[in-house]
Length: 193
Image (tube, rainbow, N blue to C red; front, side):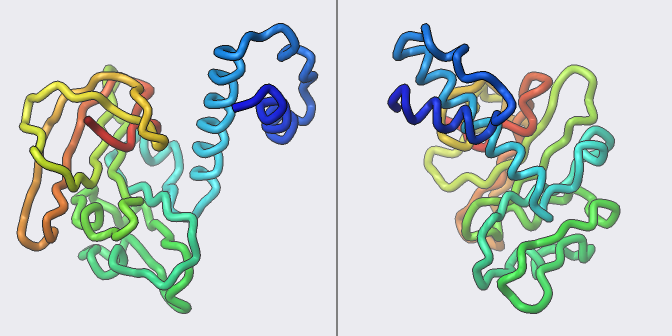
């Protein structure tokens, strides 16, 4: 990541801010700013797609978050939901839309997404968040195990504890892993190691 790329990103996402604050940074600081800008951008983009149920919903209950941003012919999430909380409709290239009031947080859709873009997020607890993710690696984590929690970019964020692991034949070798993470990480953790 170059200083020039960082300045370009900064100016693109913060057009009203003065980029002179970047002038005296060293290479490591530029890299950190670059990653922070990308992380903020991706979270904001996710909040603008129809698969995001809204912050208010997530602070009230466990609900599906679909981070699908590509208009491709795909709808296994819609078929997987027994409560009709996910709609793709016609054409099949529509982005999935969440009806947060119908979602009961069962997680049946999590393993069905071929792009691994579906998660369950629960921000309703006072001291921690939970994130349920699809997981296709071996060995599988075990309930109670402490794991490294990763960002969308695969970078370490924090430590978490496995609450449960669901592996059924219906999920076709994709496990569904629920992780308890420190408060504030629920919308950031998207992988584990």
